[in-house]
Image 1 (spheres, rainbow, N blue to C red):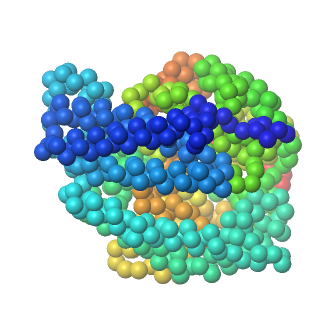
Image 2: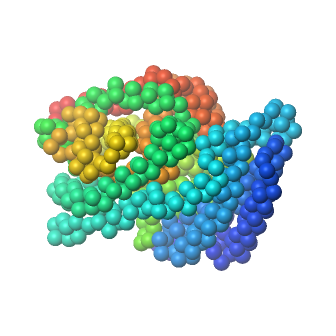
Image 3: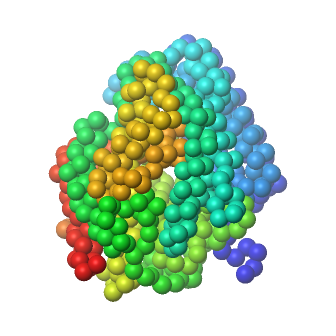
Length: 588
């Protein structure tokens, strides 16, 4: 394989950090930011004309800053040892931070500004940004005065952010012995996917021991983050963290209530799947935790990159020709960085390059169907970006609940087609893998939501020691997994392993996964009912996600996410696949 074979091409952005265009854009952005700062400082407040001017300036800064930031991020993700990328990240962080105070002041002013229809008519940029202005104004109404906001920003590194950093430090260096060798916590967790049962069990036991060795520091980190977020919600006038999170997600509380209500009704069906899997694997009291990802059946389908391209163009293009064309373009124009290599980030992600009307995908492709599905997932993000790329720059941001919809929809298209084509043990393997994925975003995510909600509430009254955190975790797992998990082999230290609990930017970073997966499944169910006419509804839905609330965007596709009935419809599709699995394994 040639050195650059299977790697993405970033030259649509820059030819490297030594590209004169990169330094020119740094200088251009610096000048824009200085002009923005001076303009804000010259004002005593906002009127429509001043806001129109400032939004134009922010828009221009966003265009240049996005290219610089994305290029730097992708260089760093492709090679952790890229010292130029590390240096550039530091420069950009300082540069972006230089206008944070002025941008916050503008938001506070926006919170008190009343725009008329005449204002929107007189300033087209205000009309284009009507939703954005309303959202930013609402944030402004929850901001503190300028000096307090500056103080909070400066303290972040030694407040909530410091606890997040402690979590990262502890988990990065934690290790434990297994079979005569030392392994990191991340390595031990990875063995849950091993085909070797003895190795899965040994790794799980070592993981628990490793987690216990850092439980004290991790408990302090988690308590610190949750106290920080409780305080932020109080200071900003949200009342509680859940209300603040709903605002960040552009979602109404009744939508989340409807989602969890449908999930609770469907849990017995998931328990039936887990109990049957336990029986197939020889367990009488539910699955031990380390067997949740144990595979059944056999799937030996292999792909090279050309085979993956043809497969995805066929399946995704059958749904929407423009999606198939974009997928083909992604392969032909080297949007995808395919193969694992030292220093490259694990997992997969997509970056929308909306200024260039392109995207880039990083994955770690190993030639199996799972790897092809991962590419399909990430190209779903690319398609989402494709449909919003003509929005004005500040109208290209969507929230977490809808962020995973297009990706999960692609995944559903590909996996359902693969399952339908397969036979025998291959069909069983694919079907069971699909149910593993759904169990992750339903049972596991529900347990994590319940855990976080309880921790936030108890933190108001005092410190939660490791023993209490483990007890809450075990109880929420019993609630979510029911008889499907062996109560003697739960994972009480999942609070150590999930970084999402330690974020200070978004709390309850769990329910969006269930929301996105089930929204995609529900959209697929509508597609099956309506056929080709649904495709344009789907496109319109994706376009609307950046300029409307979750509920408004779903309504574009004819869906009411505030009603439990929609989520029940989505879960009924999953229940059908569980029934198929139960039928295939009834003689086990």
